[in-house]
Amino acid sequence: MKKKSGFTLAELMIVLTILGIVAAVLTPIVFNAAPDENRLKFKKAYYTLQRTTDAVLNSDTYPEGDMSKASNAAKTFCYAFSDMLNTMYDNCEGSGALSANSGNAFVYNPSNASSSLDTLDSYCTSANVSDPMAAGGSSNLPKFITQDGIFWWGFDYGFDPDDATYTSGIRTDYAVVCVDVDGAGGESAFAFGIRNDGKVIVGNKAREWLKEGTNSVIHTDN
Figure 1 (cartoon, rainbow, N blue to C red):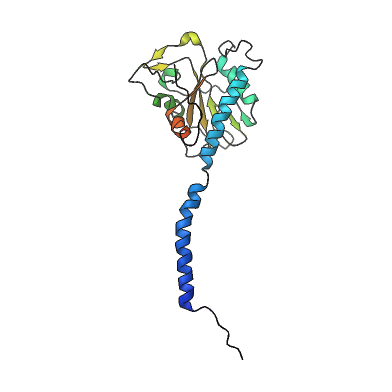
Figure 2: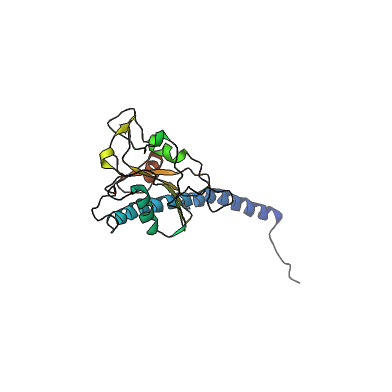
């Protein structure tokens, strides 16, 4: 009779040890290589904001190419913007406004050294936005939700170029759009300012995220 051979306990322990070492080395590499969902959604939202703003500006809604010419400019822009996207919730009629800086839009003034782009971000972080589609959710904010679960809100201020004034270094002639890539999740919102001619500027948080793996031009106020 032939004697069957097999692995000894010591050999099995050596193999398991080697596999454990390989797993310990490869696991962080795999996780680092996997794309961060929130970052992917942020970049998608950023490019969507740019493309859609440009499309809205060149649509029949603004024959003069000036978003300040429409009556109730902020609400008109909200409707025109959301109509071009696939939304699952839409409330451009919402009357709720974010209470911050006495109702002025937050845009950086580079001529004022004491000013900061953080003020643009503060507009979007000044309110806790709940899911309006969930029980107890806000009926006024956000203004709409796209099919990918991103919350979009703001649109509370107009684009009047004749109101290009500064309050403590803050311009007041931009409409501010807030984008929350994980809805009512833990990631804080990103802030963008949109001028009457369609120029888009970004807050500090969005600026930092855009520096990672993108060659897009990041506009600043002029």
